Amino acid sequence: MKNNFNKFILAIFLIIIVISISYILKSAFDIYFSKNQKKLLDENNNLKNFEVLNDTQEQSLESNENMNNTNSSIEEQNESDSDFVNKQSERISKLQELQKENSDIKAWIEIENTDINYPVLQGKDNSYYMKHNYKKQYSTNGSIFIDKAYSWEKPSTNLLIYGHNNKNGTMFQSLLKYESKKYYNEHPLIRFTTTSQDLIFEIFAVFKSRVYYKNEENVFRYYYFINAKNEKEFNEYVSNSKSASIYNTGKDATYGDMLLTLSTCSYHVEDGRFVVVAKCSL
Image 1 (tube, one colour):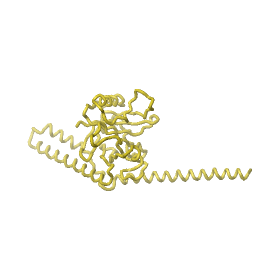
Image 2 (cartoon, one colour):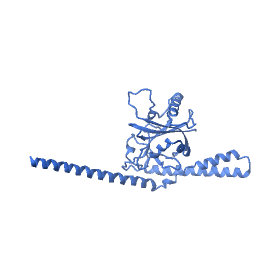
Image 3 (spheres, rainbow, N blue to C red):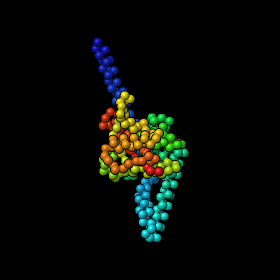
Image 4 (cartoon, one colour):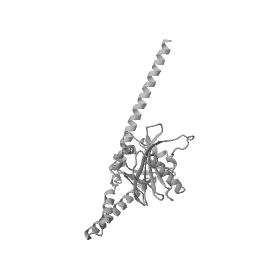
């Protein structure tokens, strides 16, 4: 009996050792890929050279208002427009270079003066890029990716984009800062660049949600909205987003606008989500 007891104690001891070693290896593995992800995003292709052009746009608008005042203001306007177009071309050109490395890279998303500055990918499903970076290497940080159902051939109504809420601050973790209206006022614009367009989206709603059960009725399942069949569906999505918004932004969207919805995990409830919705008038 004593021998059996000793064997039992030994078995428990070995199990504890195995679990401990597994935990240590997993932690080391996660740390390695967390550091490697940041390194990959900074290397090659001058990824960080995708600069937001909000200031240039504001200068362009101001020049438009005063272009008839003096000859000098006309010259400044021409220079501003030229600079804006040149930087747009540069951004698009760099994105095309990235696509040679991975054709799943569809766009680039950036919010000025925040940590959100990443390529946007699209896989054959909505799970691959949850655990892979833009070089298709395994990473617990995942990537920023657009819903697999979005159509680029005939652009859908809503760019529904996902990203992890990583504790290390990568991907969409800083999206949760939009719970503060002060933060929204400081970062109201989202830049979205494709190989054919360089667009600025204006945020009009910020809300908390969750993944709902199938039997739940009369709930706003924002994550099902990709393409509006008609004006009514579009307006319902905009209205529901604004009604759910944590605060009133004073902004709106009208039928024909392109929509951008950013979604990440939130822990205010089980299967919680934090959502930011923006629009671009084309």
